[in-house]
Structures are given as structure tokens and as C-alpha cells.
Length: 264
Image (cartoon, rainbow, N blue to C red):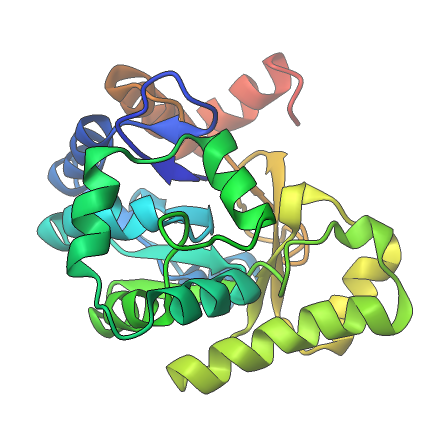
């Protein structure tokens, strides 16, 4: 689980571009298989086998730095990834970017990428330009064949605070927007801030989702609930990443490590 790929070292939920590059090159060179969400969920449901060690790379929120810094690395390494996108934020960025194109925006962004707190403040003010990806960028990433996009709701509202029609609209609206824009099925959801209630899960099933990603730490195993998929938050370190890949992709080692760390 990633959020930001940014030069703002030490910032919240951020991995530096050079570290991310080294992490993805390790995935490629060490022979790990990168999975689509369908492959991952199919394995969990017992519908397909996955030979060897495999990982599913995910990003939450759809920040602009995912396009600027992460996408070139994914292409260079041939690594698949999934971005959980807040569709209203993409709408906002698209409207603000208008016909100016992305060249000047990216040059400006590279000179001073916003911190996590700054990006959040920009979005809250409705100033999404320079904070999150617009639909043109999303469509370009999707067109590469490496990056897929699924729902992080429409507005990033905490789903444990919503119910009834409000919750249904958040879930169905984001799915509809992604399917209309990308002309591909949106079958998966990720909870904003990891927050949800039992009725949130039922509402997601009613909205047509086939699986849900959480922020709970853990690995995906055959037979696990696809409506409560655990993930590993990635730290800003190459050696940490290499060691955790060895541990978490070994059924025995991951079970022992997670039990010892109190995560499962």
C-alpha cells in the first residue's frame, strides 16, 4: 500500500522516487510476479493458482505524484499496479487543468511538490490542480496496460459516517464515473481512511463490488474474505522492502511474523 511517491523525504505516507525505483527494480529483478486485482481476488477465491512469489502494488487517493514519479518507474520495470481513485477529485483537477495541458503543470509540480498536508489542504479548498491526477493522466496510465483504476469513493468521505442513500451514492457514483471514463468494469473498492461499518460492506456488495481493500495490515491468502483484503503499508526504505517481501511472500514466515507482531 502506497500513497505518495515524492521527494518530500520524511513526509507522511511518502516514499522517495529513488527508493520507489529501487523497490520496483527489485520486484522485477528478483522475479516477483506483479498481480492485477482480478488475479489476486481470483486466487483468494480459489479460482486460479499463482506460481512463485507475487505481490499486488496498490496506491490510494490518486495523487499527482503517482503520475509524475511512480508511473515512469512502473513502465520501465513492467510492474502492474492498481490506483484507488477519488473520482470527484479527478473531476476537479480536470476542470482546473482545462485546455492548458499538463506540461507546465508538471514542470511547476517538480519544482515544488506539495507535502501530504499541503495536498490535503489544496483539495479541501477545491484547488485540486497540482495535488491529484486528472482524467487525462488516468486514461494514459490505464492505456499502458500496467495500471488499473478502481474506486476510493466519490468524495473520500468516511464510510462509517454514511448510511442509506448517501452511502449508496458515494459507492455507486464513483463506480459509474470510472466505468464511463475508462470503458472498463470497476469491480473493486478501497475504504477512505480505512473506515467502514458492517452496513458499509453490505452497501458495497449491493453496489456491485466484487472485493474491498482495507488498511488493516496483513497478507492475502487463499480462502480469505475478498471483502476485507489486508495490505502492507510500504516504508521509505529499500532494505526494509526487500526483507519484507521475503517474509510476506512466504506462507510460513508471514504467518509467524504477523503473529509475533500482533497483526494477525
